[in-house]
Amino acid sequence: MATSTAPRWIRAAKAPASIPPPLEGEWAPVDTRLDGLRRYPLPGGHGPEDVVVDLEGWLITGADDGRLWRWPADADDTGGDAASGDPAPELVANTGGRPLGIEIDPRDGSLIVCDAERGLLRVTGDGAVTLLADHAAGKPIRFCDNAAVARDGTVYFTDSSDRYGIANWRLDMLEHRPNGRLLRYDPGSGHTDVVADGLYFPNGVTLTPDESALLFVETSAHRLMRVSLDGGSPTQLVDLPAYPDNMAAVGDGTYWIALPSPRVAALERLLPYPRVRQLVAKVPDRLQPQPKRY
Image 1 (cartoon, rainbow, N blue to C red):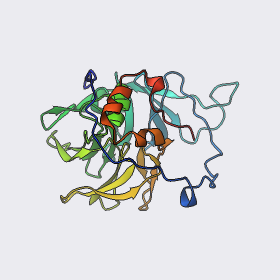
Image 2: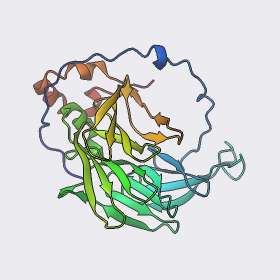
Image 3: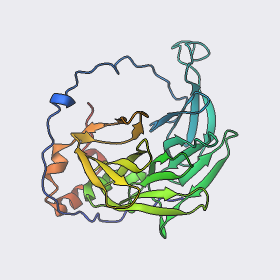
């Protein structure tokens, strides 16, 4: 397992205070096309993090209890819960950890799963789970988060923090240090190397259509980044008005970015005061700055 015990004190870094921009203009909540939702309830577990449609049209997600579930993507309102009409899922596998990002290997249709507790996994159609990587550059992968798979099977994925596992993600946000890495798994050699490090909680990642570069988001720095696979340092594309999570390519050069919470003004006001943030990190979670429902 790649989990770790949280340090006694966070190493809070000093940074300039910032002010979250208002959700106005192009960020105003006026587009209601996603309001017509259809629910696919989990039969157990909570917190589905990512969703993918496989090569056979199954809709797949994972839960916090380690189980991966799938539904027919074109399921009608039969064969599910008799009271609600929800389609019934099938169990794919249990990773034994906490699955987050899920992608499809285009070469054989197997699942590439970022498990926050175990590392990078492959799950085949018979439910077999294989560990691909739990270390990179001599360091454990503590927070395997999200991935993108190239046409040749190379997997690019994020290790959100080299100090904190998923149970202590708030501490990484409060610490506000570049503890994260962007990694690459080579299916030919089985080797995992570092594409970029010194990142602020890197999360969702995806390839450009020509696979010459990666786009990824940094949750704690609330920004969209780009890094060329020919070398060079990551560059900022957009400062976002909310904290980004997963990312997915549409395929036409546009992308979906999940924004689960607007930026928290109280947290950004504390950035110049590392000692205060050290104390805040010691209080119960319920008293710390919280993500906001929106």
